[in-house]
Length: 254
Image (cartoon, rainbow, N blue to C red; front, side, top):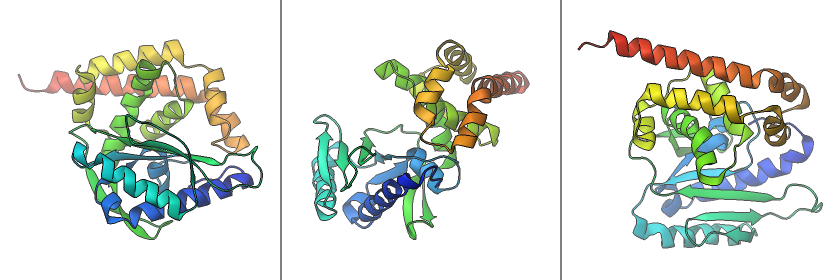
């Protein structure tokens, strides 16, 4: 995983300590599917710094209390302080020891339940952990990130510049995505989804948004280079996906 600034090394160290401890608890490793930017970066699919840990809960809803207890035991073992937590979903903000309280010292752990039924997972060795971890497949990650670009705004009224960056990176590298997940989550055709996504980016994405979210996740040189081209390139890539989908539909047998 990329570390843009020296002071971010401690955050990455704590991310890895926490993820390792989670993987070593059978209750957690068997029932959580690792996902998100940190997962993608650790698997070599994404070239940016990532600061949070995201998972899908693969167990039954009745397991949530025991999942919470196992997580909180991990926090205690690592001397992490729970800064905040949600009473509705398994979501935590934990603080690690830091001499300089003005710097980043908090990790967000977010667990989604229920995940999309079309999500797929695979066991993957993560070299930075030297462990095999249950992770979303690449096609699952890309599809969920495409949806997140617009769904985050619908849910919170906010847009994450990192979502824009990730979608751009995934499409630029030719990664495929699960259409089944998009159909399940958006309830519209793939063509309609990409049309809506293009309209959304044209209307809501701007350099101010990109600057606020990405400037601490990329080295300065890469950040200043990508901010100039991110919006026009992601629009071009989305339009190419739309055209590809429309062409595929025309060639399908009646």
